[in-house]
Length: 448
Picture 1: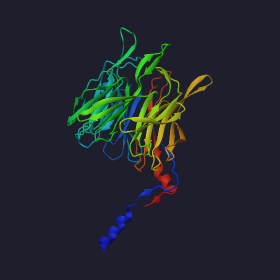
Picture 2: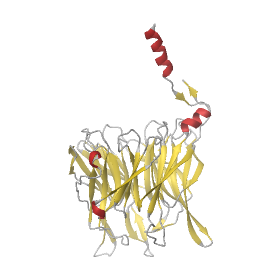
Picture 3: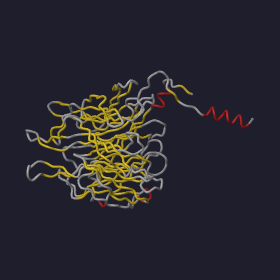
Picture 4: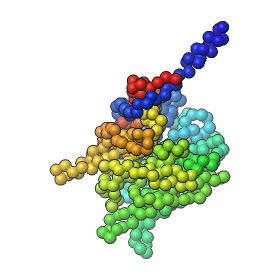
């Protein structure tokens, strides 16, 4: 009898939440605002101290440091730590979190440039990677791997399927001037691969060069053959137009197909917009992950964004290639794009950061926002919310920061003061709590 009663209690305790017929709504609640270092670049998320809750880390180019914000498990980031890189000589431009030495603890890898002049667009004298291991974060172990050019992004993933996480680094390439034509030339751009040999020891593999700047990428088995592939966004190469303005050509999706020994052939799929960020999710509802790519809009000069023709472009996964499926017009420069079932209604939604460029009294003003686009279940996306941010909302990550079972957000904004104040490039992280669990229960989700 006791065993039977225990079984009944166990069954009654197994409760699932299922959506009712009513379409749920994405509700984001403002969380804390965190300060970072100078000219923050890249935002990563992961449990760095082993307490079960995701922390945040940024790479700060001109502070020569990483900023770590530790989560207390309830979405509060009260402990902030800054880790200097090589006594302030290295400029970190990207950071990733993952287990690098096989201990089960999450480590970090940061790509850096050295001797970078903030007033120069030239290539720095040195680039490389620094590894940070979880048990020695403050006295970090440095493993230097040289990279020609300027790194753009870092990912930690088991590329060769041997059980150890490897390292992938995207590269913007090295800029120079062709002595014959006088045009800008770009070399060494592409995807750099570092194979994990065990116990945190890495060896450099052969780079996979691309035709232009590989600014970001996603490792995932897009063709479902059991091998890790990589899909990246390539901002192309630079050139001049008839008025000698900088233009960008040969922009594409760079698709690296996985092989038995790592990355195999490269299949560039050319696109006609200027990409910035990408995320994956089943936007078409066919059971496989598709791509969402943010388009920052028209750019005719190296440092000037017109903010027109921006969009989020959705690509359907056809197993051998990604086919343009739908475009969501955006009113302003579009940076980060995030794909997830944010409202827990069974289909994926889209959240993006946008920077409006508006003319007020003859002067340009920047109005940054977090925009929410809900999926109606039929593949149509409607904007349902717009939350104000600070300038340059370039990076964003997903994570369940308050540990309530739904997907929260963190957005990194780069605060740029054109007057050139000493603190002009300080960054801010905006944390948003998703209220999907609470709002769904209140709006009639059923228990099963």
